[in-house]
Image (cartoon, rainbow, N blue to C red; front, side):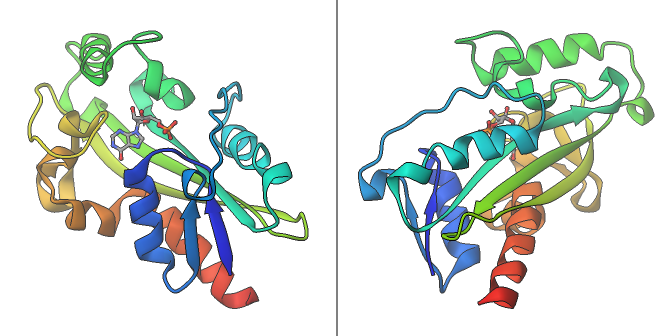
Length: 194
Ligand code: IMP
């Protein structure tokens, strides 16, 4: 099946291509589409479908789009859908981390539980819509550790590896990340219906 990924993030496209092989996965830019959808939804599911539906009039292929973020229990699920702009518009990931650590100042390790969430929206050529969710549980550290990854990775401690996400290699992270769990569910679904 030909599948278009509604993202301009090449890292995401690579990860999705790896897991969904042998399907023919192409990014929106590879088929000459350049749209950047405003994420105005209040949930990951809403935002993922906003991005996927925006491509509908541009292609007959199946479309997938993802939305993801970090949910911290002590902060009642914040930053959630606002993860990319937690410290405000046009701020750096480091500023987001600084705000997060400030909001968790004085909270002991056990109280710093969090999870990354990824939702993948799928629209098939017949117009039917499905979504798949993946999560990964961990804790927010007090200090930044590791150089890899992006976003909140340097402060997301993953107990099974005794490391932050930023201390994992891409291959290690791709085996257990929220996004890979969601893509794995999507892959199983596609294999079952095709
Ligand atoms: P989006 O899914 O591209 O809208 O990104 C959401 C935001 O969530 C990112 O900008 C990061 O702040 C955060 N995020 C999502 N997944 C990860 C991850 O795997 N590591 C670190 N931060 C992440």
